[in-house]
Image (cartoon, rainbow over all chains, first blue to last red; front, side):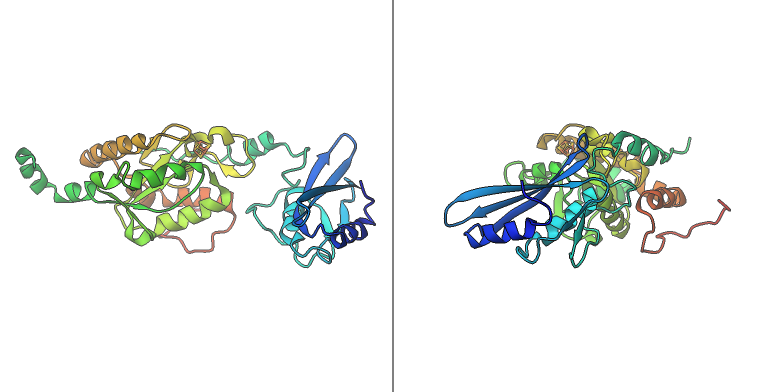
Length: 133
Length: 186
Ligand code: SF4
């Protein structure tokens, strides 16, 4: 667990120690604790080891510095998290849509997004096209 | 060759030639596409049934939708379908295009493909076996023979409704209507 403000420094120190490959950035929605857990998975080619870094940010104001200054390949992962969880990465150059086609009021991977209600409201509402009798 | 059929063929050459030259569009969506390469290659050899894969929709007349259709894929499917020359046939492959399958409560897959484009036949299964494709193809022959595979005619007739459904789920469509839309004040 690292503090949100220090995440860049922590990432940098790990990178300088040889964990030079950011495998992915991921997120867990801890809705009971009202937190998002951001997970960074680093690995090292030389040592063949993996390190998992976690940090927690509040659900109301989900902001965290972007990891792009340290690992450039964080770009698509952060874009994806922005789209699916609504997390704001400060300093990210383009938080534009990546995978989704429709706009969602609540980002769809948050736990309070009710997929069944959404399906009922959107897809089930579309009428079938009947054959001529 | 079955000589008894010759007179029938001569009466309706379009059906005979349509039946035995199904050109399947190489369009991959969902996990069912895993079943298609063995069907097209030597193990099951779809060419025995006159099914050949082609690369572009403008040469194809059989459209296999091989799995779940996400909203983004639907856009590509509609574009490809509208480019295909008539007569064209659509077969939904797997339970996902039929009613959502295991993605029935997903936020991002459309559940019923036939709300957006006309579908002539369905193959159930998750995913169906390759043999099921041949059952579907032979069934499609029967439908063509009886003049029942008329999805493309339905598309032409009900184009307004289809387009309205497509716009409901995709928002704006950036291509012009394929057929003129009669403005009936709705
Ligand atoms: S029917 Fe099954 S195999 Fe086919 S796309 Fe859906 S989940 Fe995948």
